[in-house]
Length: 112
Length: 115
Image (tube, each protein chain N blue to C red):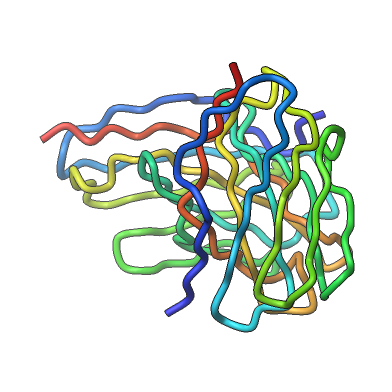
């Protein structure tokens, strides 16, 4: 049973506009969330994280928002650049768990 | 700069062959992980290890085994490959004792095709 879901398999955005990638989870125990970016033929690389004590975390062009009541997080990329074209995975875990649970990924294409 | 390396980028094997996938990390990390990535399924954990000679099953351990004889090295073994093991295999490592609170560093992946 998929505890972390990314319901949009793909997303296309014009360069310079905002990209919004969404992630939903079902396990209310999750309290730490990560976003990874993956280029073809490479391993995922860590992008940004957020813990449940916050509802927002920013790092440059990347912002992650967490809505605990809705069990929803989103990654905003502003402005989007062609180099952002990749597959984005969200992942969730908790102190009690020995693993992260990954979503199925969203393939972002930024059109020049 | 953390580096996780995997022994092969691409492998083609016949059904029934034995496969070793090796992973090495150079940051003295305690934890190491093996995942497989399949379209529409994301990353799924096969096994992880939190110390030398220690291992824990992940969500999909069937058909796989692992070995961790040295801290920096974690091997995934497919004793008798089947076509449903065709996948991208990703190794990762992390440093914190609290696995669920620490980012993982991934290797470049091994694309295994079983014919």
